[in-house]
Length: 192
Image (spheres, rainbow, N blue to C red):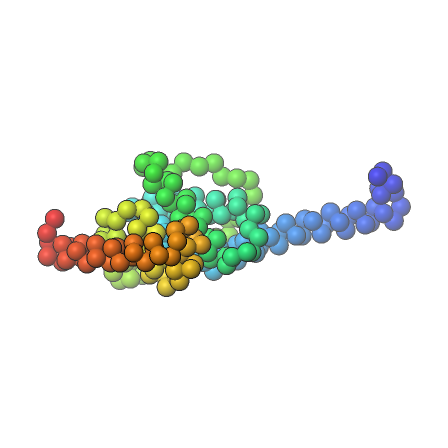
């Protein structure tokens, strides 16, 4: 093995090291690009599970950290968006279950900093908040189902993301729609 450090093999070792370095940077660039393309999905999860702006920002950051940590294990067996939703929802739900007011996390080394938060317009945000207020009365799993439904995800994709079979998803969705109808009526008429 020591022979590779001598003569012309030194150049080969250098090229191998440089290639490995470039591949690592390409993976980071790919990750930043993919997350940037899908960051609206992350915001939807944050809006679904958090009410304050601070909590939304914290959850967004925690989701990106979890995605970055899991990215080396992403094999491409499913769509990137399916994989992202699964991790984002699991992160949001586990955080919600911890019943902590703030998310505390340790940032891993070399976390890509190029991902910037997107800003929604005020009008769009107000309309979304009306919907989120009604949805906030649902259970955490019901919220996840609604979010995926609003994203026009197929029941097949929902099954992959949530791990709930399609028949159960359809039944749950019908029950959720009925709940939301009642909740919306309650909000519209000032009851409750």
